Image (cartoon, rainbow over all chains, first blue to last red; front, top):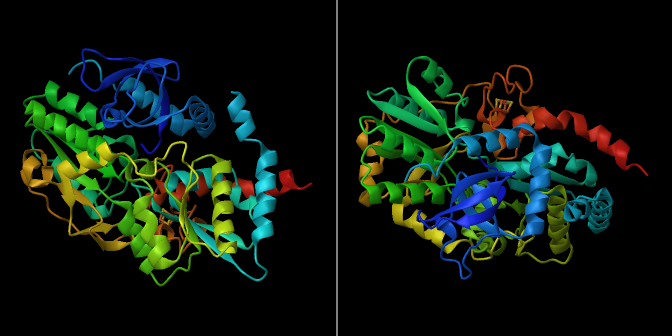
Length: 95
Length: 375
Ligand code: SF4
């Protein structure tokens, strides 16, 4: 649960307050972006975020995302487990 | 991928290693604490201590949220889970944590409905789907995780989802660092500050460590080179007789943190007068509880919580490990009675726990890295 996982915003969900569709390790997931909505620059498609327990915790740049992904892949099981858990948690499916 | 190769270059690690060595004053020993379990993990996985001169050592701090939950709190959580119509939800990391009467796994096997979730929002979904059940989220974590719980409570309140509550065990990092600074057991030269916690609280709350305790702190990223770079920054401060809070992880950590995250925590949670930490004992104002305004979502008010206090097993030396006084392998039961499969203490359960990290990686690195870096 302590991992921060990078994801790339695919689209801000118009029909769901505070949610964005995010691509994480090639799979699309709904992630809550409510903690970043007051930033000066609005999040948009193509931005990278660090995801922690279903919430975007901070905005990161593409280079940082690439570093973290590489490092997480090196972690093996802990990262795999986190991705499986993220995949199973379908936060978009109901409101 | 260009970035990654550049960043993870072992050559760079060797250069940093030499620069750190050059800063060592003859006859002086240096001891830095990495507060965060994520850092402990990186240090053992990459054998980073082997890139450091023998006079520079890293000790592990209390920054693994699973590790610091006392057994009594887990027993309380299980007591809640055993009440009628309750669905207890928890992060997977908590499932194997041993309490005084076994773990969540054991309670689940004995008939309690305990489900693993990835996010507190999953618990909310379970609550919506099960209006006739009382759904409780076992909330744990430092300031990294507390904002997510806070947002979930706000959502539950907005939806008037009265069958959803949290069993709040959120802890705060600063009082734990204070407790370590005040402990007579340990002489530290500085801190490697936590990365993700700092994205929420920023760097300013650490300033008292430099100002009042005369120790430098550098907020660090999770890459091996980030940690070596942070040690180099700490050593540079000491060599220049400076003592400040610096941010090595500025590419992720804003100096002022995340104001919205801090606000939602403050809106839904208040400091407890005191809270028990595993191994560290009671620490004043070190944890959060649900504010009166959100009492409808506070499991401690909805259920009768026994408030159990359980002494740690005699053999367990997690307290010393969490304070950085003992290295994992110095615990008497490390690797024998206590392993990741049969954990006695919490530090062996979470992959961020110092004992688990050392068990999984530590034993193999030291000699291998020496070999690889010999030129
Ligand atoms: S080896 Fe086990 S009992 Fe000893 S400190 Fe580590 S987790 Fe605790």
